[in-house]
Length: 481
Image (cartoon, rainbow, N blue to C red; front, side, top):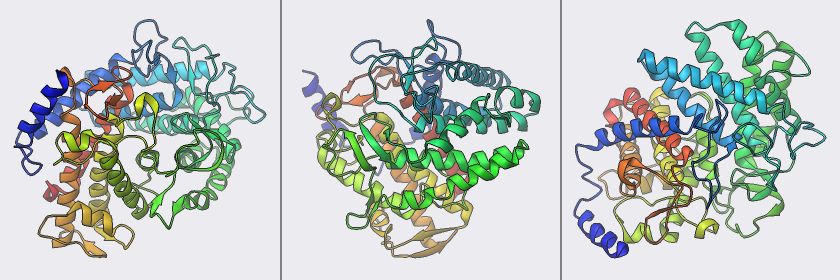
């Protein structure tokens, strides 16, 4: 019954093509942003948890996600940091600042808890993946260690410290509660940076917690944490540490370059496989796109940023592969870009598209516009040319390789195409939302109905960052809208 209704809706929906999203699209983005903000806040410090704990989902069974994941917590707080940076509402600003300091307190607590991830380079086990919601160690079997979490947490907390100080916050509080230049480290940022610098090259589990080896996403997170940490340590008068973090980060460029598959023209996700899921034959994973979005630098740093030629080539490979893999992309609104999953060989809950990964595709397109506008040009290389050709397929403009200045006909056509594709990915999200803008973890690959963990916090955080990325693109280059 539900399936037949879905197909009927699909037939009706097809009368509204991807060329006519409608005047209400901006309103949808703003309303879903507010919904997402409220959903995130509901999953921070909820009942039965320690203040500052970010639950992955309220779901306690099938699957049990009522835990604190270090990675998810860092990414969710990074999304709230964007809201904190941009809000002009005093009450919301105060609420967010308190929430962020609660997060600091909770993480200071768990950094002292010995876990089953303890090792010779991590005696406490800070690189554990998840904790109980009261801050106790999770003692069940799990994929350990996971080295992306501490690196992401360090980056988020450094960003918070900088914004807090910009607003007139206390440098003494930052020094006491976030970063003191002493060893052994006794503050959250310093603890995570020291672990990150010691753990480079150590086998670890990927962000999906399925494969032990070396991973693009983890290494990119480590590189960003150490480069940002070098600057932050110097700012905090910890010059020797700053120089050390910088030295540790520099060799990671060559490590990350090795993930490029010249034959298949995309970034692979894992090298030096140790154990775990051995069926990911393509080694093509949306984790690469997430890595670019979660770790990029400013416009002077193109190193695997969202607009990097290899990242864009990988996005095209994912788009093509996932359109072919998931039946809903052909059955429901085939005029839209595809719902994106993790990787085509995925078997978790049957292997499906996810909201957060589809939203990430939208954000990538918006970020590319902003970076091009701030740089003053957009480069189309032989590597990224197929991406841009696919982007503008069916339009009057056929892209060619070259470097196109802001304001040129080529620049305008490409940036408008990028915004439109980003919007279409969010439209794909919209057609699968539950009433009230709710997003569970996954979309059934055949029916499009939601399944797995309810109200996944990372989904809502992803929508927040994508919506703000869209705002940034509009400010940077209004002509693209």
